[in-house]
Length: 253
Image (tube, rainbow, N blue to C red; front, side):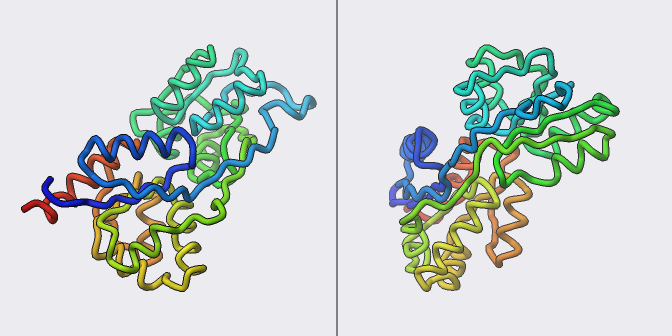
């Protein structure tokens, strides 16, 4: 790569953003870190309501959720433990828990497909953020499960986020990696606050835009953002690699 490729990453401002920066640099890109998510723990854990019987299965959808539960001293006990992807599963194993299921497709629909046939008549607790997809809870209910949801943390847009929106509006952003529908929405809200929403969308449509999965792509498309890349595996590593590979030819000499 002979010219600078500026790639926006919208990970939370913790080790995930630091890891995104390191990965993008290793790919030869210039990272534009712009955290669009901040985590606010609720303090809730599955089983808070002692009147309910223990679940037969617990579904975890993020490494953050695992870490909050582990810090609270929670464990799945005898429940079947399903994790949405390898990073969530690795964090669960680091906490000393046995992971029974990781779907082939790292998504809500992948979890539903993997659990379908095993949850009919069972109590299933889904522990996640306040912005979880209905695809998971509705799909499990359709498979016959009695679904209970525990909100482990809330996601908000950090104060001051939005540097990348101005860059996009000014044609100074070459690529962007959206890791959830909420990062798309928060990006556009930040752009609106700066008075550059339409210009930022136009700038993204001149750049390479990656979405971590189909739901994120659909959200972006609904707002008029063209998505160029959806990786086969729903991980940031796969997303960033595909985005840089797509953007780089434009900037090679």
